[in-house]
Image (spheres, rainbow, N blue to C red):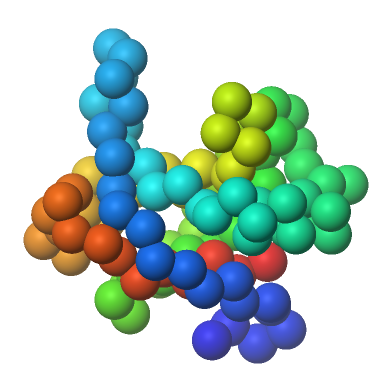
Length: 100
């Protein structure tokens, strides 16, 4: 755990964006997203971007989550480097921690 940061824990399956870019994401659960947005909306940057640190299987990195109004949830992008290091299978549910 990162000192002074609030951990939000959840499990989710990665999914691939179907548009022209090959980005992979995990969606934060809707109820968790509502809680985070209620507490940290004033810290959001453009397009609902909220800087965070994330961890999956002990691998931590700095990133951001974006609020997706269609899903009513934040999306955590999974960089190719992170997926490679973790040998991530998008069919497998991942235990995720987002630190705010």
